[in-house]
Image 1 (cartoon, rainbow, N blue to C red):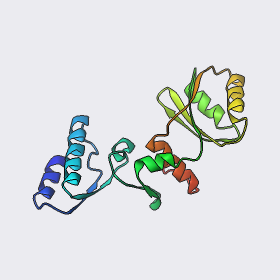
Image 2: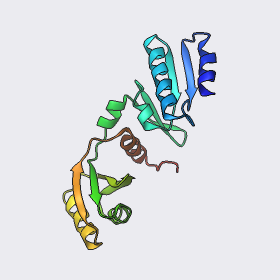
Image 3: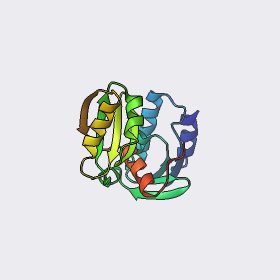
Amino acid sequence: KQRLALARTLVHKPEMLFLDEPTSGVDPLSRRRFWDLIDTLTRSGTTVFVSTHYMEEAENCDRLALMNRGKLIALDTPAELRAGMRDPLLELRTSDAPRAVEALREVPGVLETALFGRSIHVAVSDEAGVQDTMVARLAERGIELYAIDNVVPSLEDAFVAQVRAAGGAPVE
């Protein structure tokens, strides 16, 4: 259904194309084909505007306009948005990720926590001692810390940081 709608639009060879959530409800193989087609269109000179909630899809775009609550909060390339994160980002693996998230949220200097599968991404301030305090808090709660690493921020991490910098919280 989505592919048919796109094909009908392309009959007129538009110079500019607006696609609103084009892969919503589409299986992974069709999603990949959509993005291959979008890439072909942009290489042939068509300007394509895409709205999406899928950050991994947004990575395919040349420029991104990040919005929250109807307001533009950032406009740049995916690489520049990720590089613009000022706060260090850590990835933790623990014996109990959900409990660890709750414990870490109480630590001064922890700006954001998010579950990523069995791992936790934690944005922290540059304050000295934040990591030591995090480790101590987990130990106090009886949560084993298996690993703590610096990570390259994802586009989702960059979006959350931009929302935080704009003084808001993402819409749930």
